[in-house]
Image: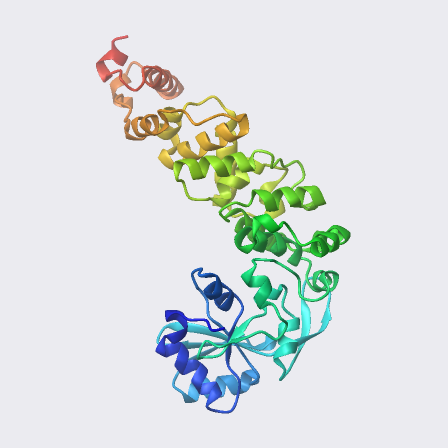
Length: 383
């Protein structure tokens, strides 16, 4: 079997691989680019594996006229940039010691060693410059059947890095076949190693969870996480029971998946601190959660927070209440988003000043919103 695509036949990528092969070393694209190409999904990053040591990769890259950046040279990775296109090149490695979060590695000349230190069989696929697929661990059938399985012993893979428990659910959401369900060996291993999740950095957990929630339909994976006890370990107090409804509503109206919208639906205690969300992410999830549970209508929400937030809040409210979206939702949002309050502070001065001015403006604004944004400046001032 061969992979193909502009990402592989690009002369810059071919030249980078050739500078290694021509010197007698192996050069194979690996991981996500091979997986996605075989599935017909977009390829974003190009990773290359080689038996050349990092210092040799650097020397060969520089001799070929490429820019070489030692991005992770202690782990065997250098980035070779060919005409603005970066290629991460990593020497074959094998794990010497792991503690569930990081690994001590040793360089290897064997592709099978490198494959065994990866997480899932579908990620242990390689391809040569001509597209020929190299499958050292027999993972190709799993990929073609969209079956997410840990490489060899699931428990051992988890003990090497407990974040792989979350990656398992993320990969199922993005690449798995829902009809097949989840690999039972993996589920058993994850359930037996829940304590390992406690030692993960909150940044890694947050990033992984957001990637999962961005999948087209993460509801089955999230529900399985709840059933195993993973979800409550990460987000105590959260509730995913309306997630499938939200996904259905999004698909029904043609709105793209949004991880933060879905996270706002889940809720839970201390989202910002438990997941180390950015200030902007934390603010957005909090605002959406509040709006979804308050009585503010779509038009007023759009006026106060913008059309996108109003749409998100309406989706969340409908999902949480098990209702359909209002039939005139988009019209109401458009009305509110375009509305401009016709009264200015100067219109009320000097009769009102200081806090009294603010209270009067707020009262008039409320009356204007209650009128469906139809009351004019004169209507409000002469009332």
